Image (cartoon, rainbow, N blue to C red; front, side, top):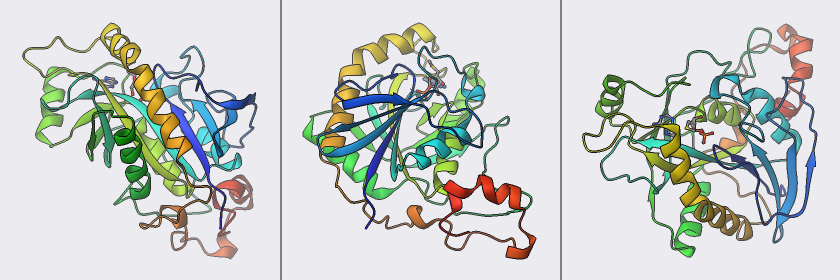
Length: 289
Ligand SMILES: CSC[C@H]1O[C@H](OP(=O)(O)O)[C@H](O)[C@@H]1O
Ligand SMILES: Nc1ncnc2[nH]cnc12
């Protein structure tokens, strides 16, 4: 049995977690780089929590400037077994209104300027990403939303764009034609790296705008995003607090194996592995190396 530690990555507008007891900011060093900020350790009820503001306190970091590997590695070193991303998104569907919460279950990665793996020459690995989100976490978020009477949608595809500019109207229509539900700039490669780190991952997406496609709504602006985030902060915090309070003490084994993703993933023969890379992989892949 593994003790559950619930990680929360706070996106735009969520730079701390009020209600965290015995809370303390602590540095966690990573051989992969510099995490977005110190990690905030604490507990809600009996659940151990580690919170990280994705853009750093004060929103210093742009989506392309975040060191996603350092963040996931630091969270792994902090013992995180289950990770919830809270993210602002644009809606690509009429019926997903600003203010709605979507429990995303698929991603389309359109990013072009980010390192998206811990592995590489000297230790090659291929994990499955067919199901990037852990179903037990989706169910726990759903139950928390029901308990808090928060409107939500279960399932949805998140397009991750590079940014930082928002989409053109033509791109927005293209993403809609793909059948995608929401768009943001941060969940990739975060979700890929969480899978490589064998951390179960799920996203609570908060719709803030209709991106650039809706004939009756202005194209997205930061002012619009901030206004909706401010209106919904209380709901998001209640949702996370309820999820945390009701979280099991032991990590629940993931039915799709997100917590054992490296069991059959590493291709490189032991004798051909690069010792320098292996040393950096101690937290991420120590279980199988
Ligand atoms: C402030 S709008 C664009 C910004 O908001 C989202 O961030 P996060 O996913 O961290 O909530 C989006 O991905 C962009 O980074
Ligand atoms: N329309 C949008 N596009 C990309 N990221 C977003 N974050 C919030 N709204 C967004």
